[in-house]
Image (cartoon, rainbow, N blue to C red; front, side, top):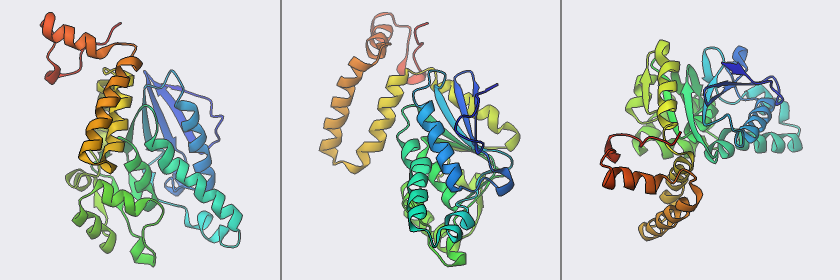
Length: 278
């Protein structure tokens, strides 16, 4: 695995392994709690990687034994209580790092939850397209236990990713839960023993890399947009998106797939991705 020099700062680590960019929050001594500087570093790294040819799939994780333990209360709140300008800047940077740049990243993103994931750590998890967790990971939204509600995008993320009842239960009780429960309620795609977490994440990433990148990009963009559209508008959007994709896919996946399935009889679409051109 090659590590790229970190022009973005010391609070984010970026490593490359066969088309996968591993982006790690790097405050292990603070369980990777999001600080204003960490948000700046993550945002800068994501801006660079979205046009980086070596990055086919992006994996977001945390250094040490945590994914992200939420927002650093001392740095985001107490330190900025008397600094409205600094507070506004810090909040804007946090929006970019934990949601906007991840949700709109042009390549498929996977959250690999290796440990603690609390409060504000829920936002980068939900902003990723897919999520894998260690069974031993601990999740929670404990804000009500110390007098506030889940802020930022967390409340919206919970009702977006979970059923209504699960979102209410874990928000109102503040009860923590493990990776197995996160899988059961739909917060992650699947949970595995921690010892298998990296290998299973790589397995998922490599499966995705068998699909044409423009096709993946168009599919994830459609899934982000259609929930806010009516059924008729969703129909029109996806028809238009497919027409545009035929012009934007240099691998010509649609025509190639039709030929392999209808003419050559050597490909079955429902049983896996078609072989990509060499």
